[in-house]
Amino acid sequence: MSEHKVEHVEKDPLMVLESFWKKNSKTILTAVVAIVVIAGGWYGYTEYILKPKEDKAADAIYVAQQYFAMDSSNLVLNGDGSNKGVLYIIKNYGGTKSANLAQYYAGISYLKLGDFNKAVEHLKEFSTSASQIQMAAYGALADAYSELNKKTEAVEYYEKAGRAFDKDESNSSEYLFRAALLSETIGKTKEAVELYKEIKAKYPKTDRAFQADKYIYRLSAEKNDLSIN
Image (tube, rainbow, N blue to C red; front, side, top):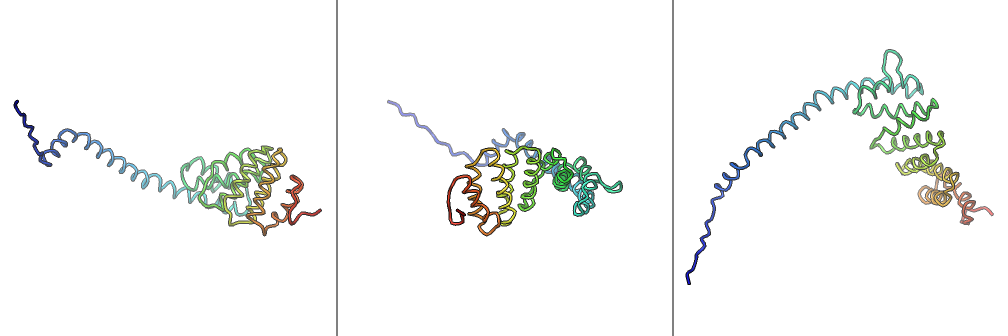
């Protein structure tokens, strides 16, 4: 019976690497070039397109912000002839931080002017990581929906406003209270009671918390320490 010996030849790592390179060099080089092109393109876009656009938008919105502080809603929206309004900024500087802020100014301005559909349109386009401002935006959006008699949507955004910035106890309790009141009008009494209880639990020192008990009692006949017989 003959024996067949199998010889294990240890491969030189350099030879393995050379072989791999020969087989894959084209793919690797293509990938490297693509990364360089993408990185260079992004840098160029940021430095030569986006940054100048941001600067121009910031300059354009400055006067509109002054009019917003003065409650001059029409001037905020359309400008004064010499200076552009926020509608121009939204249209011409989309994607910038100033255009995002312009959506907020536009929404609030339309709300004050009684154009609730346009208020909704612009406020839904706005978002920010600044919780206190986002709270105000949600609250204004809820007001617009309420004016349009879209009570379910109004409740949704009053709740979002009430939970967006807990440190502002007065406004948080107010928005949750509005959500509870509207919930009652659409027959969601259980949800309304839970909202009143949430106000009492989270914001016990606010005026709305002191008022919550009579609403809880009226809706659920649930007596508590502050109930009046």
